[in-house]
Image (tube, rainbow, N blue to C red; front, side, top):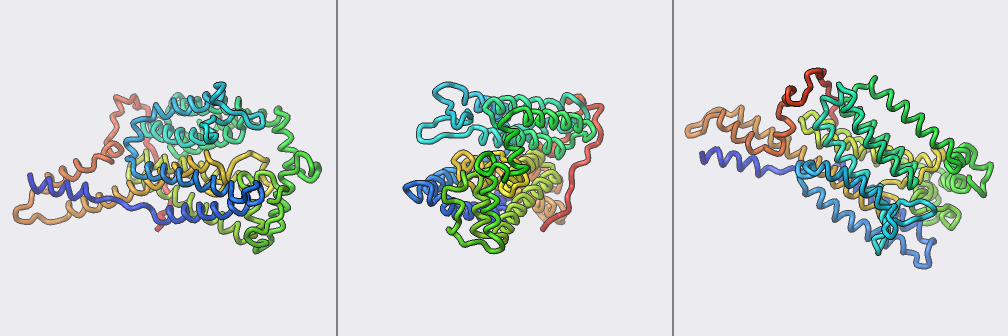
Length: 441
């Protein structure tokens, strides 16, 4: 029994490592963000470092939250999935409560915390991804085979979108629906069945854009910003001028002209235009490459988790990867004039308290996913090595050794345990084909 205990203890003592590529991309983008916030906001206030100091404070708090997320077992987070969903609705409702909700430019998207305002939808993105990941683990077979299991998360997303549209926040509404659709597809939903809700959703969101006057003005100004350069096309035309001035190598860090009261929101929504002006085409290619590395590594981690039967971890990685990739694409597309203005920040680079805090939390969760995956792979390697070792005098039988090792791996037992189709009512389920990608080093 002492040998069994020692073997189980040795296995439990095996930890993991955070993914170096993922961590490197996060640090690089965050560092670039600090530099560009300082450069783009230096002329906006009487104190040239007002927005930089504010950004650094939120970043410090965000790093603290990220460390907490990195040190929290994902199975502990999964236990609170229903509470997290209730939190999503509570956060979107509280902005309408007088005294708590705060209105800016006619939109009620913030709550007043006294020392700062917090945009609740940023927290909703993280909480919703965690809830949907848990849902896909619990019902991943039903999602592939039945209408009710597929429609439930779409109904939840629809209810959240209604609350967002009442604020109004069309950009976040579109992003939330896109994350939901993407996670359902990666979670194994039947694609022909999924196509119908997607088509109806696209028609509905298009109608909302067309029949709302200010959204229609954004679309028309996007199509031809020079037609009303001093009116609806003011933001985009100045953003395009900033991008054009950058040429190949840029005008030099800190030398942007458009940020000098010409380009609105130069340190938040349009920070990419200032970056393009100061760092040029080569600088923007570097930023896009870092986002490609971050998102690519995130999806690779998700695939590896699915292959290891760690579905909750994998779906969290998929959800955060979809969020970061789509929001980055939209933000960069708006700055380059290929998409209408949406009011979405550039993750890890733009200034903004709420966005910085919750993006840091998301990065902490990603790093936790990479840590637990590496830990599981190391423990599996030790287990396989123990199974292949020959018996030595005084050794316990292999079957007992394997049992002790399996008992020590309780963090992955839930994912690997077989599902009882009778208790889940899945007699009509088809054999699932898990998503696979080519292996990356």
